[in-house]
Amino acid sequence: MPWKSALAIYFLFWAFSVFLVLPFGVKTSEEAGVALVPGQAPSAPHEFNAGRIAKRTTIVATVLFAIFYLNYVNGWVTTDMLDWWSQVQSKAS
Image (cartoon, rainbow, N blue to C red; front, side, top):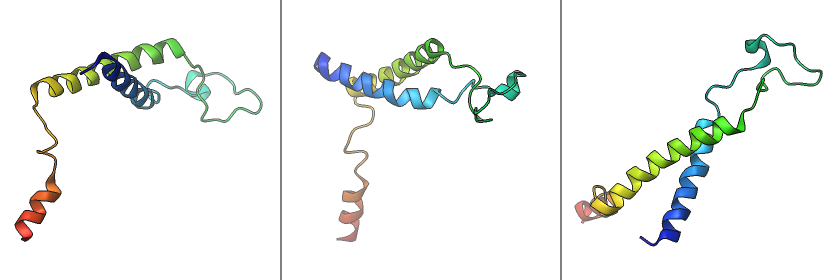
């Protein structure tokens, strides 16, 4: 796999992982025991730590990419294994 393709796929895993990691560890102002700021939604996070989110996202994305790359190299799951439609059509014929 060319390195540019690997980098692009890693970026996709990273972008997906942001949305996977974002909801974990979020506390509202009520849960933190702090009064709401006027105009603040009660469900809004009390504190946003972008560095912590980036670290967690990078770890999750790296693990997922490693599994993907190992599968790419070793061929554990191929597209032929996932092509159920052709198997259904061949049984119907």
